[in-house]
Image (cartoon, rainbow, N blue to C red; front, side):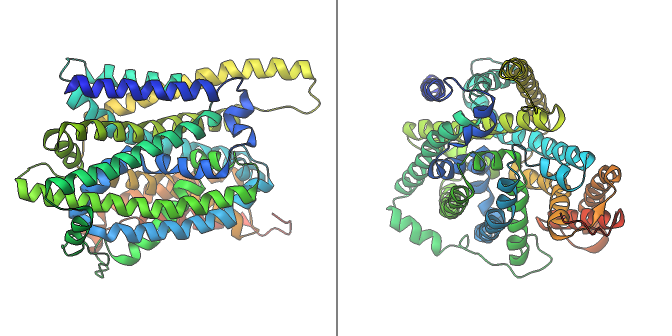
Length: 489
């Protein structure tokens, strides 16, 4: 079985490299950072599904059903509200300023300290979050394939990051838009096929399985206890702000949107993407319910993130193993390639000041482009090495529900970005730029302490609304270090 899974992995990877070779031909820095502003909006919308869901979603959302049931769908409703804000508030600003890095807005609005503070928090969050998304996929492949061959986990991680480097280092966004489309297709196909196979093993048709789930306790959408993490308003509110922060204020997700030719195309992309995402998450929860019903009937001990791989590889017919692994790999690569590209972009644009200079001759432009390309490759490699170290750290500190950790990390690290952008877009006050880093460090530290002690102190459990509190504290801090300004923003 290990050999069959490995062959499926190699075949899929070769297919990705074929797409990469075609799309990265003659790619320059503009293609790497912006896709030359020629990406078809429909292709971007479809491909963003794979980038948005990731391996954590593929594994953890089905495994979460036992704890949260279908209350997660209210969070997805919140996502849709967040996508509306992104489409009609944030993206018009990004396109109006013709941004490559969205954090350049913070320099325009506040100053250079704010600009680099915002970019730093994005890089911190993306390094931790993307590494977590990659880890959950790599650990499954390691446990079911590479471990049996005696390959150390560290070497397995290096192998995967090496492959990802090879197909992202040249083409950047121009390549990712197309490889994400391929990967989304395989991931959705795997999701649907696994649901059909589990239904068949339980003796149900697809419609029969759906009926079984809708009449089960899992099919619960609303919880009214305000002290519970699953309370309905927490899910909707948290979903909206998680979406705004993790998509609208995230360089990786916005970089793909900004590769569309104009604002209208980007808005069509975002709305289409949000509607598809609603359906896909519902299917994930249906699969999770089916897996737990299968678990109960077969006395399986695995639960949480371990449930899906355990059933797919050890209980379902052999073809399910191949389908599952391909789906998992399809969830891995979009998380990694987009993260590496966006981190490289943020560091090169925000900290190294890449880009054309005024009064630059054609010869000077070519020389600068050549020099910047070499530096960009080194930055790209450095982030890949950093990912490797973080993934190895996660390996020695594992948790049953990694998606929970992912959203907690996002709530802490994206809060300052939420506060910075919201303050800039809704007020005309001028901040003391050099004090912005202090505010943006203080707010998440306070939230971290509250999150770890709120149950004991107040008998209250924070969930996704922790992000909202974090942004609010940042906003209040900015008010204290600001003054009225007669100038227009």
